[in-house]
Each structure stands twice: as C-alpha cells, then as structure tokens.
Amino acid sequence: MPELPEVEVVRRGLARWVRGRTITAVDVLDPRSIRRHALGTEDFIGNLEHATVMDVVRRGKFLWMPLRANETHSAGGTGDATPGVALMAHLGMSGQLLMQDPDVPDEKHLKVRISLSKSDAMPEQLRFVDQRIFGGLFVTSLVPTPDGGPGGQGETPLPEIAEEASHIARDPLDPHFSFDDFYRKVKARKTGLKRALLDQGVISGIGNIYADEALWRAKLHYAKPTDTLRRADAVRIVDAAREVMRDALAAGGTSFDSLYVNVNGDSGYFARDLEVYGREGMPCRRCGTPIRRMAFMNRSSHFCPKCQRSR
Image 1: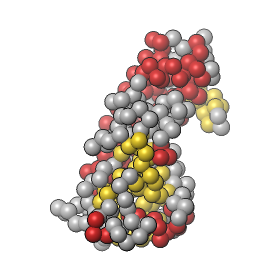
Image 2: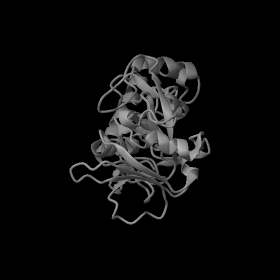
Image 3: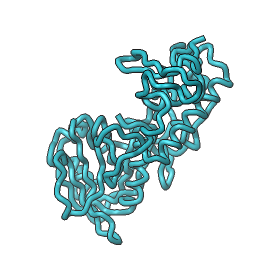
C-alpha cells in the first residue's frame, strides 16, 4: 500500500497538471471503482462534469481534489458540483492516477477516465487505473478542520478537510504538525511504539515500511512500550520519520513492482536505500549485525537486534 511519500509524489504531479482546469467529461468503465460513491454512477459524473479542480490536497495517505462548480451549469440539479465538495482518491494496493493524452491507448486496468479542458500542451486526461480494485474514487464533503488550520498539504491551504480524513492526525511533514499533541497521544496509547506509529489517530502517513526505517534511524525497538517513551525518544522518532520520508520523496517514493508509479507512469527508487525493510539476514549498514524479521500485526517488523535493543 502506498505510504505518505508515494501519495505526496502523486499529489505534486497532479497539482502541476490539473489545478485550475475544468472537467469536461467523465467515463466510468468499471463501477466497482466508484463503489464508495453511494449515490451511484450518474450522481458521481454529475458532480464532476463542468466542475473546476481548485487544488490537490493530502493529509497522511488521504488525497482529494476540492471542486468548484461552473456557474453556467450549477442550476441543473442535485448532481452538480457545489462549494464544499471534493473528488477523493483512494489508491489502495494498486491504484494509479495517470495523466495521459487521448491518443494514448487505454491501459489494461483502466477504470475511470476524466477529461480536462485544454491547457498549454498539458495531458488532457486523468486516468484511474487499478489492477486489484481495492482503491477507488468518490465525491465527498469538505468540513472545517478541527484545529482551524489547513486541511493538509496543498498549493492553496484552506481550513477544510475531506470528511473521511477529518479523524486522522496530522503527518510529520505537515507544517502544522504538533509535537506536543503527538507526544501526549503516544504516551496515552500504552502499546508498542510501532503500533502507535501506525495508528492514524496518533500520527498519520506512516505505514509498515517507513515505520521500520524511522525506528532504525532513531535506534528504537518496535515493541518499546509507549508509556515509557521519554520526550527525547519521541523527538528522535519524529525527526527520523521526517528524514526518511523526505529522502523517499527525493527518490520518487518506494516501488517494489509496477503497481506504484507517479502520474507520469514512472517508478520510485527509494527501495535501493532501505536500511532494514526487506533486508532480513543482511548486515546492518551501521553495525554489521544481521537484520532480523519478526511477525507483527499480520505483517513483519524488520530491525537490527544490536542497534535497536528491546531494553
């Protein structure tokens, strides 16, 4: 599943190509990919056609595009886009948002095609491709942010957030992230440190890969009880999470196969720089001790038993 750096790579690419453009047509090739839009295909299309994409915003792993109605089409019924709505994209395990021109042949697993107004030789279609159909698109409401700050990372930050993302905490790369809030929440969880890092209500955007990488950089064990976490340890883990995510962003994210690509269809290369994840039995690059893998929440935790002692 894409984590924060991969979703941010997609967000930046989309912001470059779709912000300020009007949706001229929508083709739903597979209704399963809009199953989260409870009012169905006709309402989904009605909310999008003739609306202008105002921005592309991300909080944690959530991604949405605020929409503004085109006033010449806004009197046509309940399906039209109105202020305070957004197109939400959930990438799931294999969802891809690709910018393509109409003359590019359809991808094998193309699910939704969104045509955009022409603009300075930019690609004219946003295509949602999803091999495993765990992801999807839907229209959602925007609600005020609980803390009054911007909803997330965007080009024009506004104090609104997609309703489905309103319950999650800010992520480490968010300028409005509060370390004090994070430390209070993580101490109150009374669980293992990695479990707390994966709890989107404590801190968002961190998944299995980057949790392992951040814990290695911070020299902290994944099972360390959070109620024993010193403030200095909490500072180290937040700083490490920021560092590893910025490094991943610089490399275009982490790709293990063709399922994660950016909007141009390119893979990320941070997998080459992973220190522990996927390196079981290989020497720790810091001390030479073989990396160990342990079962964790139906997944795995990778760590160095010397650098990251449990006590």
